[in-house]
Length: 167
Image 1 (tube, rainbow, N blue to C red):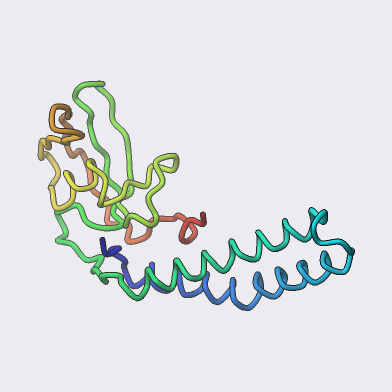
Image 2: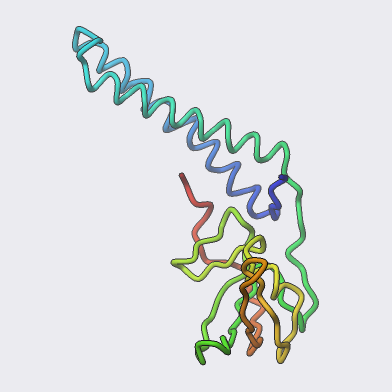
């Protein structure tokens, strides 16, 4: 599946790649060299930990570069009265008789603990393009779902997540 990214997502990923190549990679290589100097590699925990960290960084760089090569660039723009990317929305959950506020974001920025809802999630898919007052069915599985009502839309244009989440 091709990752859907905005231009801002691409910029943040490129910044992370550059940081990992210029800073993290250099530190990891130095840590491996230093640990190697401590002697017998078969019983050298520091050496194995340093190699693992170095390999983890290289894997993350490869993952991000592959994501950029295969990504579909999408626009953040939406109509003034519709829910779009990076908009803050307040939804009323009928079943729970509660309201909650979310920011609609691309999947790489999704973070339910920070109320950043991915456009790939059931809730994100259901409300994208909807207007204030719309009653929307959010299908979670073939047999389960729930209704929400769009209470407000704020055209924030920024998700406030301080960048891409790191694994």
